[in-house]
Amino acid sequence: MRCNTMPSNNLSPQKTAFSRSTLGLGCCALAALSYAASNVCSRQMTTMRLDPVWVTCGKETAAFSFAVGWALFRRRRGLPVFPPRIEIGILILVGLAVQLIGNLGSFWTMGKIGLVIAIPTNSGSQLLTCALFGWLILGERVSFRSGVALGALMIALVLLGLGAEAARGSLTPSDPAGATVPLAVCVSLAVGVVYAAMSIAMRRSMNRSVERCAILFFISGVGIATMWPLSFFRLGLSGMAATSSQALAWMLAASFFNLVGFLGFAKGLQLTTVVHANFLNATQVALLAVAGMAFFHEPNNPWLIFGVLTTLLGILLIDRPPEAVDVVETTV
Image 1 (tube, rainbow, N blue to C red):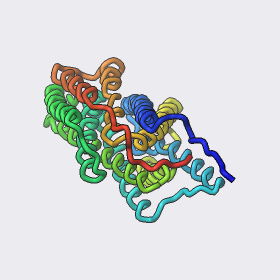
Image 2: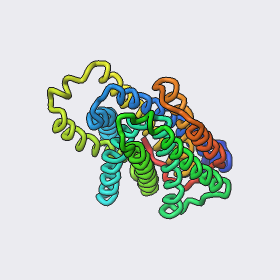
Image 3: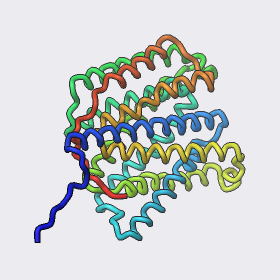
């Protein structure tokens, strides 16, 4: 008996590919907005003199709780959850770097040099590293136009460094040696490299059919496994319990936006290239630069303004992602 089958959708392959790239860009834009909101919450908490380990612990709690629920949901449906051991080991190592260098370093630099310098610096470092690692590890080609955009980012990093040097006196007036600002800039650059490594590891794992819930579970789980004991060691139960309700509210908000940002970024990585996903995520630079000047009265000078504008120019110069992106689709 002959059975006529209908295609799963009425879109042509070209239209389907365009829809995938558009959806990927939309997910990355959502991630950028969410991460921007999370960073504003974190910047607010730096003014409250909260312990960075305790703040990081709070930010990862919501993500890990969501990952556990997601994993249990998949298990009840009979779907795979955890990847092979080698993939787990890679995710754990990346998670350690993200928690101990990325998250702690990001919070510390925001308190020392502010959003205006810290975010463009680590975003530029992240984009440059993603382009290099994406080419070397994933074989993703960087077009001429994207190369020009990366060149603009390199110039932006130089301008931001000059701006940080010019603003050193107002940033750290109690540091006569003036070593804090250069150190914070270097740490911010390292934060970008670590976040880039996380992007590459996430994309590599998804190319090997690792579920997004497993990626979230292990990266956030490393944060829970490290930050809760460190918080207890640094603050004790009494210090943790003494956190004000206002501070807890900011921690909860940062945790929520961080989770939404991670989920949007992970889906965006699944639908577009690493370089394009990180370029879209870097659009938060403008929002956070304005927030830093308007809400936190952070210093500004021509070097910083030109550095932020050049970073935005680099983001705008990036071309559209290719219509076909070789990423394995996974189920919820």
